[in-house]
Image 1 (cartoon, helix red, strand yellow):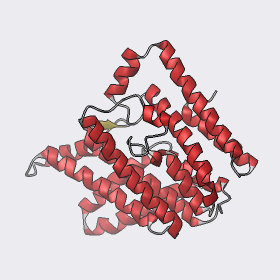
Image 2: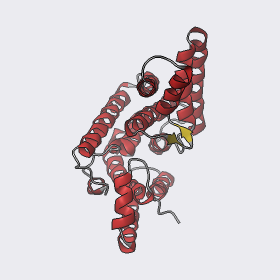
Image 3: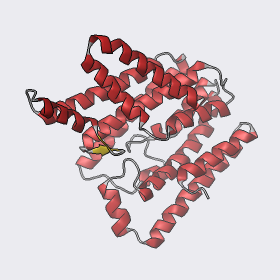
Image 4: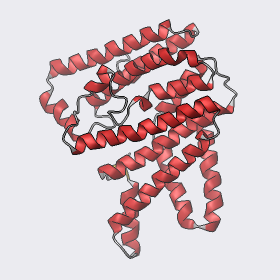
Length: 299
């Protein structure tokens, strides 16, 4: 199904580019920007989580709604990738100039009026808005219960990002993901439950298995915490200079080992939740394996 998600996104962006290329080359360039970020975004973790939750719950693999939802999640991620790079002033993403940098350079190279930096930031923000527009277009086609979950997910992502930004500005951000480990970070970290639990729950809604909400929620909370610990230890997304300082200068070998052990314990606990869930045995095993991979503790 993941191949169909790639095709769905590619077809949508290709059709939009073809339409706008005739009317406005600048519009087509913005669509190309979105496509570039989508292509370079890596592991498609949230589409994988959604499809796993959907198929484990007995969802029809031939139905289009899960593919649309997974594509919408990836485009939503694209929006937040662009916004995050712009907010943080990142210069490169996967070895290429970030959008606000490349468009500032375009402005300066062409001798356009105004400030190049502001043009770059403005254009990057619009590219993020465009990715969000495409995501919402797909989200609007979902059946009513799943659409409600999609809207909640969208809201959590915005509020989580604002909470993280406000904490950072007020010097209250803690690079150690303690609130995630404690299970209290739903609105308090940039990832929030949007990272793991909500894609699983959206998959369950699409499969008509609302009875899985408790099991998926408990499983997702533990996987989320293990994943955030792994991100802290490896310098993953949302872990910047503060995490680097804490990990490299303040964490000794014993503390690193204890953090890895905690991630492994959380993954094991997530696997135990999966094995108790009302799911086919093969899918319980797959969810347990997914928890181990997300925690970075796979052998």
